[in-house]
Image 1 (cartoon, rainbow, N blue to C red):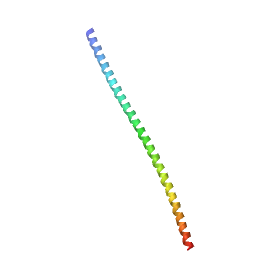
Image 2: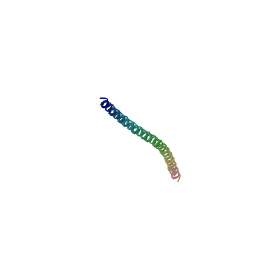
Image 3: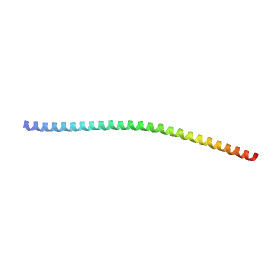
Image 4: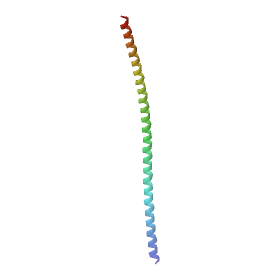
Amino acid sequence: MLDGETKKKSKELEELADRVRQDEQREEEMRREVFGQKQRFVEAEASREVLRKELANIQRHYVELEDEQRMRERDYKLAVEDARRLGKDK
């Protein structure tokens, strides 16, 4: 009778040990997954920062182009006015 109960307890112990190993494996997999997600997050943040800087540079360049265009338009208008004035003086 004791032998049967010992075998039963041994089997229960083995089952519990198996469950513990499986839980530990799942925990390790979850830790790896979390680490991978953290890595991806850090990389995404770095990419986002690079994109922000690129956008700021593009916006700055756009403003410079607009300013340059306004100056050219003003110079063109002045040149047209000068040409008209010279044409009237003749």
